[in-house]
Amino acid sequence: MSKTGTRARIGAIIKLLSDQFPHTFNRRDPRPLKVGIHADVLTALGDAVQHRDLKSALRAYTSNARYLGALSAGASRIDLDAKLAGTVTAEDEALAKRRLAESARRVSPPANVAPPAKLPPAAQTGVKPSAPPPAEQKLPAPSAPKRLSLTDLREAGRRRRGGMEL
Image (tube, rainbow, N blue to C red; front, side, top):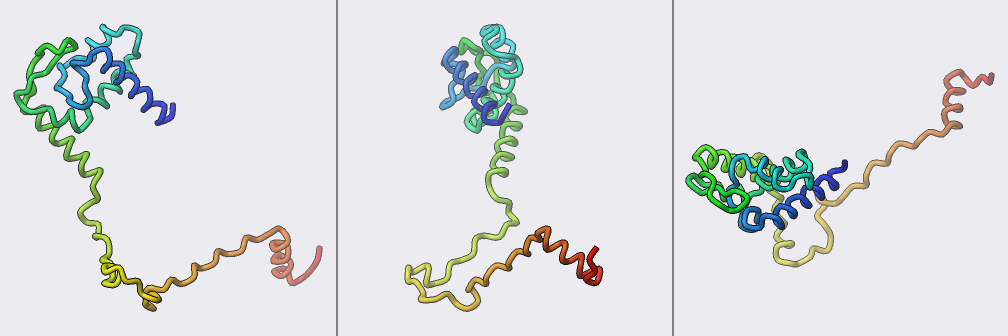
């Protein structure tokens, strides 16, 4: 299935979870979920979702930056009925912080990339120069080599053989 189709299916499952369990699944204000909630959801929804699709949807939900931000040591985890079902450990919090940092690194440019070039003083003041300085003038792009036709290839073969015709 295409990436778009997969994302749509995952989005539909997360919407189903939000509709069925509004106090547990909330994308705007997520709360830490019970460890093992996957099995509870499968039991509650039955054949409404496939195991693989639910697994992907829960992975997407729990990879969200807001959800990861909610994982702080000592915070309460909740089950499908929004009842307390354990607490977030320090290891869970450390993992969440590491995943957030990795996500931020993927989004932001690497540190070894040069910053964008500074604009010339005329561009900063809004005054347009009449012509660009000679160093900044664009040279015409080199032309691509001509594509050879069958006639061109035959002529090249004749020249290589010394002009003899067969």
